[in-house]
Image (cartoon, rainbow, N blue to C red; front, side, top):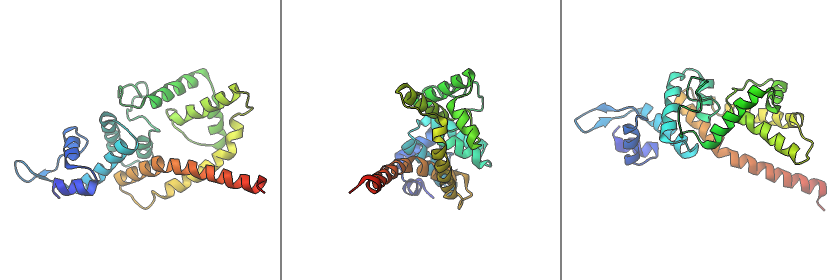
Length: 228
């Protein structure tokens, strides 16, 4: 296909496609003349993944380049690919420099969470460690969500709320069922780029709806228990 069709099917302007080509996010097409090239289905799938990483996850061009490079290196490993595109695993392979090699490309909150998680690991077992052990979950030590769990529980305790990791076990069981539903929706495609794009969209875009469902369920349960 020509670049105009690639633009249309990929859902981004031609100028943006050309920018991604210049930045090395998209591989070059097959030259058909001095000024034109043809593109294939792989370009469309990669373009849609780029759009998801930049437009939905909010990554910079530089961070997206690193993620795409890592995805290409691990495209036969679905677990690694999903961890990379969802931010659960660093795009760099050197753990000692993970979170630093991309400079300012990684969102500040993610960098802080990973740095704090590393510090917590060095200090000893955290609430998140205990919860993960109880659930039998296998989670990367670089996952920012680990620190979110520990920090949230520490904040609750500082405010006088008697709450520890054991209180989260029933919620973790529900999250486990939700994760199974999430992964079930990726089972009907074997293409690594398409699966990665769908994972980003379903994870990031569905999160506000899932929170909204919790609020609706709370209102309904309150009405059932306390309503007239």
